[in-house]
Image (cartoon, rainbow over all chains, first blue to last red; front, side, top):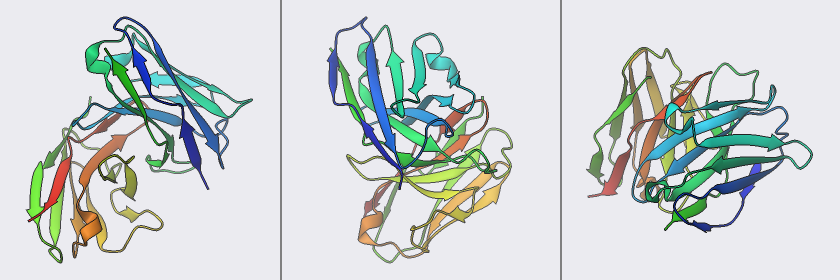
Length: 121
Length: 107
């Protein structure tokens, strides 16, 4: 059973950096892609990017291209998302999610972390 | 980039009703569409992928259809636990995007 456990809530100053972790169990991040999705208060879901773990290659949404880094640490089976130059409108809940297995034709997110609230103030 | 537009944005219905939510893509995406349900304070939950494949454990009252640019999510007989927000999503090798969401509330 896939389980993703994220790090706790953060309060950050504008201009600073936040790093959110996502520890996986029941799945090896060396063989599965992890996406990051955020949700501002009262708003919809926004895809930020992913790490294609099989190749160690990140893939970012254009909006976040200059400010986000997504990595995995295979030794601890943990994914990380760093967002820099934080602004007040980055206040959101940040989710990690596991994508469909690489041998599947379809693309979807089938396992989600519990979310991490990042407040920029 | 491909954009997804859901309609309606808000839907009011009663237990036992049949409801349909539509998701339109700005260009053809074949059957590469997923649907998620999100309850307040919870992470999204996968319902449908490949436009019409029901995720394991999801009740059969949920169904999806469509291909190309127009897709639908249908709930055949609403249950109290179905009142939530629903999102469509397209994901491919290069990027991902969500619809803006449809909030389903009790009438």
